[in-house]
Length: 502
Length: 104
Image: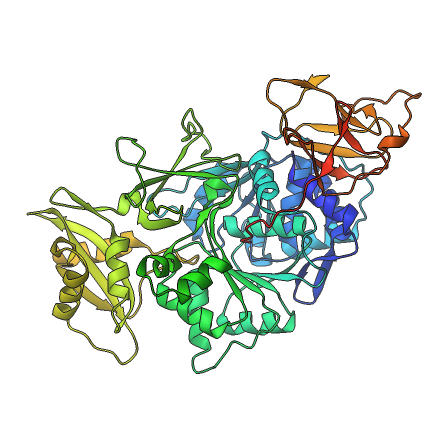
């Protein structure tokens, strides 16, 4: 197995179809295939051990991804928001590396030891100008590393997640039908290239034959303009992006995107109020919630359009609640919930989410595999599964608050706070407490022109949950700290509140 | 005859067909055919006198999945050709594309 097999199939079956559009430029599948071949020759000539990419989305991304697979060299998309020293630390870990980056960085890093940097424009000029003349040939060893992705490091130094060809190809074959897209289909990809969802979107769109429309720098207005201009039919968003799009449509009756058939979202917790507003503003659009991790080659559970509609229309709380679920496991994926001792738990019991399947890597470079003998990977995400298989996330297992020996999940308390009519966003964390070990604390963002007292919110939580769940400290902020892919940075909240209360 | 495993690739000895194994019977020797003739490894050279059986010449379609009646074997066509796929004398049938949950 090799990712190139997927592109080769698209190039031979749909060669003249447009594969990817960025700005005014496009590549067909045949052109992308040829460019990947030329890129692979350049990569092999460099004698580098990694192909790194430090840039926003452009045509260079799919070419580098498939060119690396062709050359048999791991592809390493790096976070372009990293600061100097963080970035240098990662570069040192992957040298010797061929680095594709923007013009300014390419110049700055020209003399960095072990790094052969090239500006995106020069690289694109080189691989698109030179016709590919070699033989299409790549390793089919499924165990070779396709991608190294540095995790966001919300809890420590970034780890390099290893994704082998077998993982990503299994994911695609288990979730995409070849050439299933219609010729006018187009997917708007605005997640950054260093995010697993960005990479998975490229590979699954290529295999489906769905044109990729790239948006290098996200803003709600740019997204709406591009979606209209390119008549996009599908889009993937992280929750914060969808929230911004909805805010920018304030006052509008609908989003006026008649071609947009489907929006999928994931990468962070979607507030129920946001998805409910989104479904009203995009009445003809199907919504799909996808949950996955870098270590699982992207999506493992899906809450489909029918699930969304059923939940939104239901009067029954336990069905309506599914709008906050991440859905059910993909056909090729199994999910278990286990307690701290490793015992498998039943429906609606909270524990840690374990996952098993061909697409699951669970491996970090230079560390022993975290997958157990039976193939189960501990996600470190806390959650539960209901009787019908719907998975509910409760934050990271490490975020569980232990108050006087009682375990509680921040997500449960946040959900209740978010249901209050004045609350727009909420983060709940545990802070050190002499009496209880940990105490519940919350940071609240209020809706515009709303006011509510700490006491009222405490009473609200008490009414809906047990009194032990009532935050003893509540602070108000203008916004919560999220990273750029929509993950709430709880450690930042915790540090702020611990400082205040300590 | 050989044991197949998911990810293995085979090519036809009599046409352009190439397949990848998606699922195979565990621990069993199986003989997969294309055009009525045993399929070979990608790096093997077909024998010159092999010719396609007329009753196995309906062809394969790129990107389609093929299964046997018992659904023990599933092949993905990665290159199409003129022969039909078979297992132990039985022709494989086209697996209906199921509606897969799509997320990206």
